[in-house]
Image (cartoon, rainbow, N blue to C red; front, top):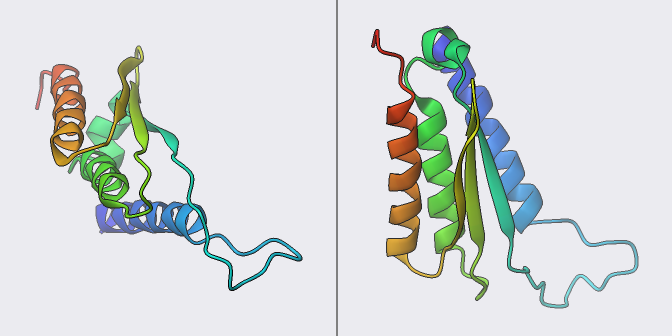
Length: 127
């Protein structure tokens, strides 16, 4: 039950971030009928891979699926711009997947595989 609640909170946070980035409200005095330009984004995904996450908070690895979801979302976004995404996994020490230009589906898959490899490297031995 607690895991489902944590997943729902995490999912809601991702949806709210997505809405705030891709559907911002017009500024005061801005023409609502003008086409909205979405700039190319540089996004850093911070993932808590501390022992507490492994053993108590996210034992089902929802954080991995959420990071993958955001990568897929940004790689399939249709503004005409290519976004760059980096992943920083932190716990005992930070591990970094450097910025990757999401200019094709293979780049998104490569980024997800790099993060998955880091995630598996730090998986506690007692799993």
